[in-house]
Structures are given as structure tokens and as C-alpha cells.
Image 1 (cartoon, one colour):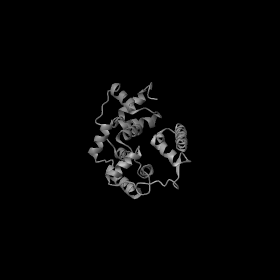
Image 2 (tube, rainbow, N blue to C red):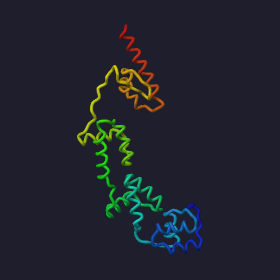
Image 3 (cartoon, helix red, strand yellow):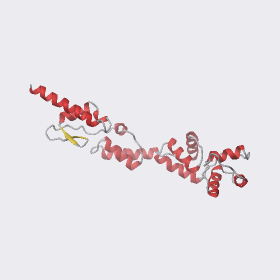
Image 4 (cartoon, one colour):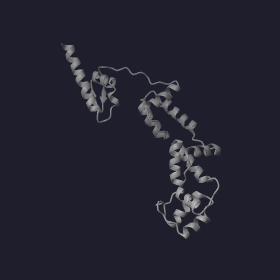
Length: 221
């Protein structure tokens, strides 16, 4: 609604009387006049049309609390975007990080990583790295992208998952819920077909099944 908004004298007077804190002015203005103007729109109007100036953007305790909560689950870039949208501000990532450093607001990475390490130590013997990834994400809110990240974290702790030896006779192997012979499974993994998209994996399975069938025929002849 900010584009093309026409400021009346009533609007200008309101801005003049509440411009000590731009963010608060924006919030009060939108509440008073049932608008949805942005921080930049009102600031531009105040600076250019009304010739108003204000000092450095002050941080309220509410804002400090909000950014601290956001940083618990988000990197600075994402936290800054969410924060700006909520408070109608235009802080850069660097400005937010500098303020947090000066104000003693921490992302608490050390505490979160301690929790991640504790989860890995507890479940490393029973869970795969993919399962560990899900547990870490659910319990800490840390958005790791790959099981390899958990694997590297475990290696740094001097931990590793026990090597599994396949029992060719009794061990069951599945690909997308379908039980397959050991040879098909090995061919599927060896060709990295498990990394294909959901739509292409069935085609990869057909290929390795044909390869396995051909290899078995050659052995019998």
C-alpha cells in the first residue's frame, strides 16, 4: 500500500509528532490510519518532504529479545530478513551482527553444538547418519543439509558407526520399499542410483535388475 499513498496534512502532523523513533512511528502510523506502509516509505517521506531527521536507530528491549530468539534457530541473514519484516526496519546483516556483538546477544552456537554432540554420542551405535540428522534437526532446530555433516561432526569427536557386514542369506535389502536381491542392491548403490530423484529411481532399479539378470545368465552358460 506504500506505493502511490497520498499523505494528508493529518498524516504529516502525526509523523512530525512521533518521529523520534522511526520504527515506533511506522508502527503507530499504521495502527492509527489502518495502513501498511513500510519503514522505508515513511522514512523517505519524512526525510524528503517533511525534512525531518532522527538519530541512529535505537534498539528497544523487545527488539533485542526478538533477534535473540530468531538467532537461536536461524543464521544472521535469515534472522535479519524476518526481523526487518516484523519491525519495519531495513537493517543489513552486518548491522544486526554488529549490534548483537556490542549488546552481548549470542547465537549460542556453543550450547547448540554441545547438544548436537550429545545426540550423536547417544545414538551413533544404533542410528544411521540420516536418522541422526533427523534427530538433531527435531531436537535442536539446526538445519543441517546433509548426513555427511553429521558424519564429519562424529569423526571430529572420534566416533564412527560400527561397520555392518551383510549376511547374504538372511539380510533383507530394500529399495523404495521393494525387497531386492543382494546383487541388485549392490549394483543400485554402486551406480549411485539412490541419489536419483524419486521419479528416476524406478528406472535405475530396472536397469540394475536387467544387469543382474544378464550376469546370472552368463554365469550359467
